[in-house]
Image (cartoon, rainbow, N blue to C red; front, top):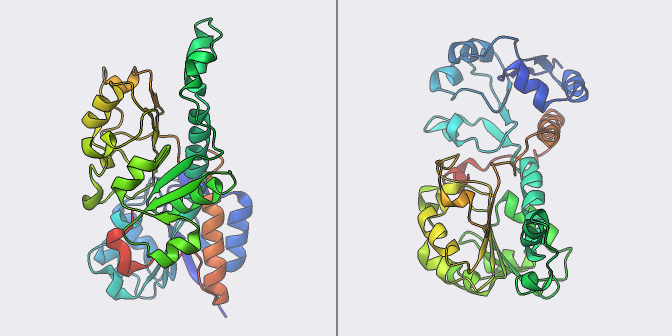
Length: 334
């Protein structure tokens, strides 16, 4: 049986960032691979490259895929995306074509969750205040004691059982927490029980949590879901961590709450990015601002390449692809 013709719709630079030589060698064993070209790929180049393809590999830098492009590839069966969201790539009505789609979002989520977990542990131990003091030549323990909240017996709230949320949940279960709360309107009570979390309203999560982890997708319905009302519900000295998207938070409301010196926030994403010069997020002592580094930026990108290889292996073998996107739920996915 001939190998399925497979085309990489990425630049050579991006291909080399995502796929190791071992990944490409394995793909070459599985499929008839047309790797990325040295020159910058264009929409017209994508269309011609897709002709007669059965599998396309997409990623960061791939142009939006039009109906004309898919019409040029009537034999296309699978699109394996080496990054997270696929929504920006697909035209309206795409699901009717019957083309299957996979995403490396679960692989990407591992690094984001690890970063969020690290921020949580550092924040619970008041490390940021300690660093500020020692950098200023002071050895201070007692002034930060009120801000220390050890994981043992603490409550962590996770907003959304997304890929990141579920990976973060797995990491949190390694701690001796009192409870893990979950807000996700698309998770049933039965699934919450299987996950080992307590399903609550957003209001209750904000009120009860020592740490709030925002892991929701960026959708019209989630814009500014964390607003002044929700932030005001947080207990004193609670920690708010956003590694999702800046648009989910009313930034003005967050700044106003931080200016009260009542809570601590770790912010890896803003809206817009970067924040304008002079934005208080840069200088507020109870705000830890990082430049959108939670996602894969170096070695973790290879996890995404490994995920693509896994999906292609499953497809060629006729097995279920573990990271297949449910296209009928695309409107609620990131």
